[in-house]
Length: 331
Image 1 (cartoon, one colour):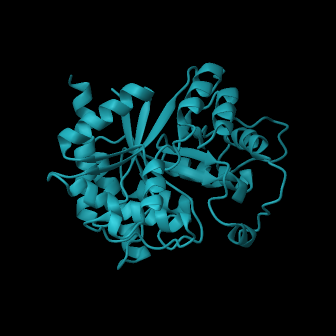
Image 2: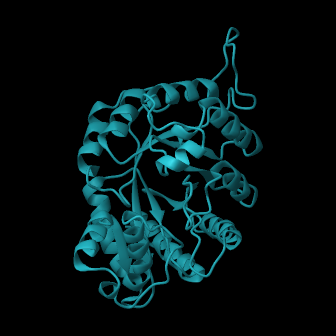
């Protein structure tokens, strides 16, 4: 059975607030736990009016405290924004509070614009130190040596599982070289997906962290019981993505009946190409579409993003998706 998980950015919707978004996140995580999702990951973005998960480790603690068994983690922490020691201490603390339930996905992008990166006290013109930062981070989370001058306390000896996140060949190569599990951001940047997965699997070096490649595919899901509702729900993400790409990020828009009435044809083509790894429709349609993705990419895990404006509709979408994923193990 392919494991299935949730990716949540705690979307702030039009007409909503960050506080309500964070309450919705906990409610969704509690439902996801009951529906059999393996992980609940939150993502770091800054200066985004539509995302409430900027303080990612804090939100992870909030979710972990309100759940019992589901793994909770980052999808991901943007490592260029942080010193590896700080990340190790944060996630080491989480792992100490919630043993065997914390994941740490790390990404190479800053997750924001240059001005905000400077406000984070991290320069954008630095030499790329991501591989070294990952190795340093792994060292802090591993067993401390007697002569180790700097330790993460808490953190040392927690062995928090680290995932490499990426949307290009760079992350695939690094994850393979270090023998780490790999999650591809196919839900919004699928262009290099096929080549990245091939590189990761073919070049994977077994390690103390994993003896075999472990690939996670990210998929957007807009599921509903009624015909046509899924595509209607998806228009919120289509609008949000278009606004982001044209420099106008904002809260998650309300859905519209006709997406072509708010996005011109060229922009809509660009958006739909970026959202290729999406499934929408009735339970039967979701099952067919998901089966196609599973057969094509053979992921070890699927992580589902469902940026839907209405919270009740979002819950139902993820419930249907869980039922679909469970059905594959019954056949």
